[in-house]
Image 1: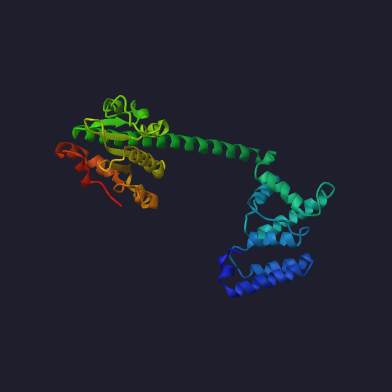
Image 2: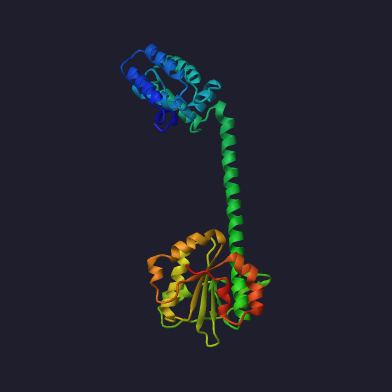
Length: 328
């Protein structure tokens, strides 16, 4: 049993073992009750409901099981205020259940589990009665409100994520443009806006990688930002990863690398500071380390956001990124 007062205390272990042995060897409820009082006097934390369920399996006609839903159902049905985990409360509930079980023996089993099952259904709101109707309605309303809050939070987080993603694409496009490069923005992001400017305004209208299958070309066309020289040769590729899979971004960059077969092109993952460890772990994968080029570098949101203006002002070419790029 995962109860510290049992597995960390030899005295309590022996006392509990004696209790179980005594309960197993008797069919007398008085004897079991005496053992319960003896065990309770030791004040071993956590043994109340756990032992009650063991007693049910040893003596199913004499001792009912005991859990939160059963207690709730009992309190609803009989207008009681029984508390979970207290022997005195459990025994009080047991006496009432024995009386009810005897009174309705014609519809209930001798096994206390039948009545306990009914109480469980009431306590878990699977059976609605007058006494738990208000609680059921309140619980359902709380569930609805919880789902609503969760949806609102998800929508808000998605909006923040989308905005941050667009912001990083904007900085990369702005920087690349100021360094004299042509820009390609992922084809499905051209209509996104940041700083009152559509990303598509930075981008080439069309971009063909050439020498690759249509499926790979479609994948490359979804890379967040590409910098190209005046002959439209790819100079750098950037994948912005806020909450999506880091590995998916790496695969898109790898597809580009293997398609253009150029050691001059540089590749960057752009991600928030909290994902830096994840980036490093992914970039240390053997399949990435053996690529026929330098390891993929990464840029952190904070650095790009804070240093973009300075790099635009003082940078001459892609080498300006060396100041903020990190390599595994």
